Length: 193
Image (tube, rainbow, N blue to C red; front, side, top):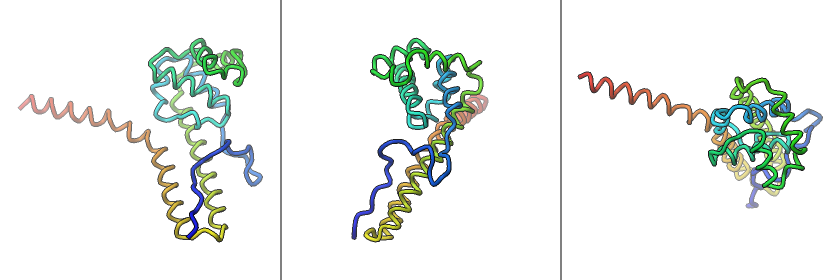
């Protein structure tokens, strides 16, 4: 049987419209998240397991988040100056609109108080785009009569499972504090006996 095409996302982001409908995105919230990340040093830790550069719809926001991610993972300060410098090192500063755009991101955010809530919105929009891409490729493979339908179904199941696993990571990470608290309570109880 013919090998079905893979459902792996390749190439540019989805166009602004698919089948006459706007693709899910929230570029204003993306900008707020990026601004908040540069205002509050602890904000990156709150969203790092929820967001990836590709979570952002706007290509320049992807590049800015990638710079923030590089700084955060290296445990370097994340602020307007360090992000600007990292983008300059990556030869991407002009691609994103220059230092002025970075400054505008921080000026339009009052605080980082709701950064996790906003990051969740960005992640949900990304998941919706991933599902649209998946569904489109599934439809194309199903219409292609050279593909074996059982192979298409197996590949679709695998691709959908991968999408769900990639986007469930946050929930798995959050259980650690619960386990730590339970272990502490068991240790306390053990000492009291």
